[in-house]
Image 1 (cartoon, one colour):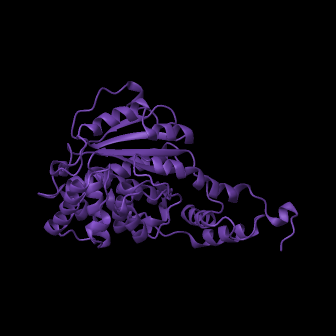
Image 2 (cartoon, rainbow, N blue to C red; image 1 turned 90 degrees about the vertical axis):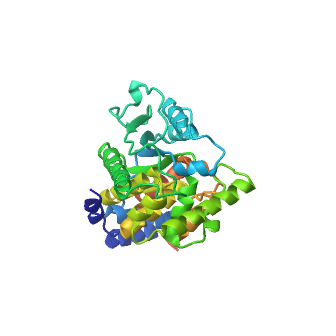
Image 3 (tube, rainbow, N blue to C red; image 1 turned 180 degrees about the vertical axis):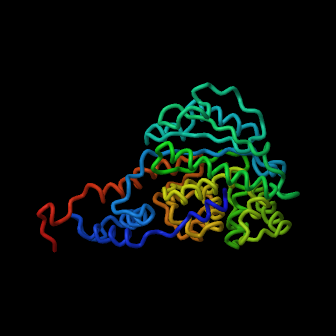
Length: 363
């Protein structure tokens, strides 16, 4: 499945982009006055291969959840059980992501790709058989293993486990798109997951771990120093090769990171945009781009996470975030806040009159 997906990913359609650029120049506004929104609409036209591109709706948030063996190194003060507890909160509709999804009219699908502790009972309305709609969130059980191994001691995953997680993300992308989604939004949940994210960003960009590692949930100075040292030692121990993205994911990644990479690849193969959330998402996006460089065409950076690794990753991918609000929550919250910006960029091409059609004089 992974190889077939990669083979299906192609470059942006430059003729559609040229048509969108020309249309932007004829709309009733000064040329370039919508700034980055014009560039975004052109890129989305290239992804869709049509001008104007389809409106990016309905929106579907996919929250991949997993736990991490590196939690044993004391890189976060939060107990690992919080991952499963937050899944229950997602399914009950009580998290920030749920509030923002209701505001945006987006569906929420939670995927257990590697939670270590048992999940609480799930209501029937939240089972995988329920459709992904803007109503009740649903849970997909796709647990590859009960959390990763401790990357400070050994490889976090085997190559087969990493592949299974990536292909889980691909399947979720197809499921959501087949269900009608016009744009996918990345979400994540996993106590300790900013540590593997920092390692992934450092591995794929060649940046020093001190520049890719942040404070995550708000750790104190001693914990932060320990976290940087863990990332640095793991990279020294495993020597991950950025030309081998599956190997990098296996060595220092998380199951949710691998699944998010798969979601991005699956969407790219279907030429559907993916609105990236924070540092977990952009670290996964680096892996997706290493698998298939043209996959960057499907990526839209929703926001700039306060985690420093996010800025490093976005710069490496050549993506400019749409908003910068100092967020570091994850879950898909920043992507949801940026969603109206993406929709607005496309709606301009659909609904704004040209100078000729409106009878407005040009300069």
